[in-house]
Length: 156
Image (cartoon, rainbow, N blue to C red; front, side, top):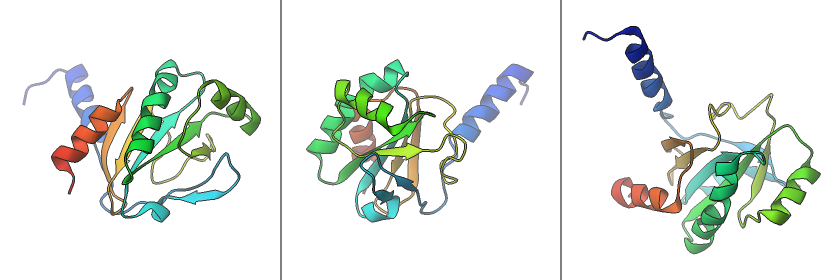
């Protein structure tokens, strides 16, 4: 194949960005509510892991739609991964203006979950199947329709 260097680099990044876990992953993080949440507690459900930050305009726009998704589907759980080096009180104040109906988990920006790594862009959203395997990753804004359409087309 004859590609110039920028095109080759772009292709390599796209392939690397689409890499998915080969087996079930585990994520264990403290929630804003004060408890510990484990991804494995949601086996049997689809789980949407959404990296976000308070300063991220597209992230703020996703919150109401992801809340509706979380509330409307008994077999889909949304977990918000707050990726920002700030105090929990700041997240609480933010969520008063942008309420989320789903659990908010606190990510240490210096030590993110090894199974996910640090996001390359915000928002970043992972779709985890009923067995705990990452089956899709979206970099940038998404909608609940994009998620449910993917599940309807590829899910079991």
